[in-house]
Length: 207
Image 1: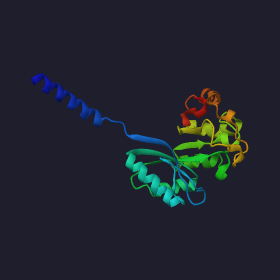
Image 2: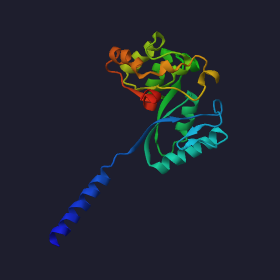
Image 3: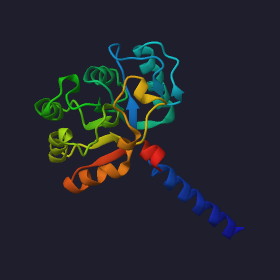
Image 4: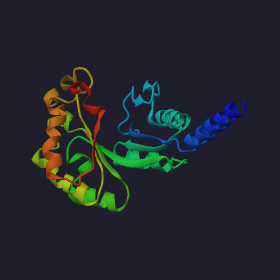
């Protein structure tokens, strides 16, 4: 009986330590919107949201994140959407990022990107949806941005894999599945050895 009690005590102690050391939930891929870019139905943690406007979508997503025990959440969207969500983040969950398909989207250039980083308006560059615009991160147009991200140690989050069904027929005529091949990132990783980069969707159809 004494040995049994000692074993139970040991197991209870290990369980308590394991609970105390359990990792916190980090979500690195949450889309955010404001009224300028909200399109129904928008994605949320459980799939597609029934929310009919940007405000309702935020409330639903935020509640789901809190319920799931999220501690850190990378939100990506337009600069105005990210700024709006950051203001409403009472629990201080969010890490700001920028969703961008083309280098000049939102009037972006290298000067503005550098300023957004220095002003701590963004901490992650992405989701980069180069696939949707018919390019890859290895293309010349993205190199100045990657150099800045490497210099300031800003992670790059890139969309890899395909997109929704019939993507080229619904707003992204230059999207091609071949552009979502993870091996197209190989030259980028070799060229920028200190660049931190993560693949959205884990390569999806290329698994």
